[in-house]
Amino acid sequence: MKSHITPYILAGGQSRRMGQDKRWLEWNDRKLIDIAIDLAQEATGLSPILVGDTFEDSTYRGCKIIPDTAPQKGPLGGLVAALRDCQSEWLLALPVDMPRLGAVDLHALISPGNEFPGYKPAVPPLRDACNHSDAIVFSLDERISPLPMIVQVKTLPVWEKMLTQGELSLQTGLAQLIVQKMEYSHHKERLRNINTPNDLK
Image 1 (tube, rainbow, N blue to C red):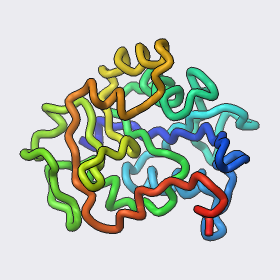
Image 2 (cartoon, rainbow, N blue to C red):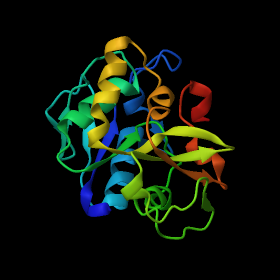
Image 3 (cartoon, rainbow, N blue to C red):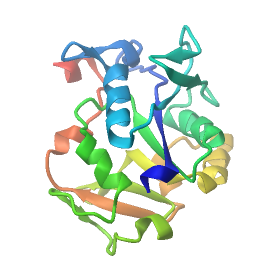
Image 4 (cartoon, rainbow, N blue to C red):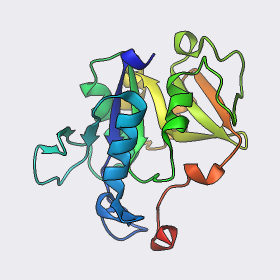
């Protein structure tokens, strides 16, 4: 599946709760955006495409940058932009604010037919997930975690309709798709976002 997937980082960065652009905040002396880029490269072997506005240049660390479809619309605006840009069958949507994630976590999503310690399919069988699903996400205590997400480009109309209607919840979009869930049974803190200054401590 890895050869049919393109990694995108949803790097809009704006956060009311944080009060500043999250992309440039540091976690263990490294910028969040740099952590996300390195993670995407390690997991896929490809340079990710960055989705966001207010970058000073057209590239960052050699990564292409595309603008949000609808600024100030949260992850959905970035996801729609990524799906419109993507040339592969599948897309990896990675948030910029999950610095605890590791490459093994993304490998579990990208290669759902393999066995990974600490992960189990919430809805078996998982081996043919890439053939029978629209999206693959983690499930945390039986609740879907929408990002990171592996999603088929053909689902674009669903997300575009939501954006037009002002329905910005990724959970709502996933509810309209055939979703394969991987139960995340260890190190649950890895799926925590950095949303407030206290989260950086």
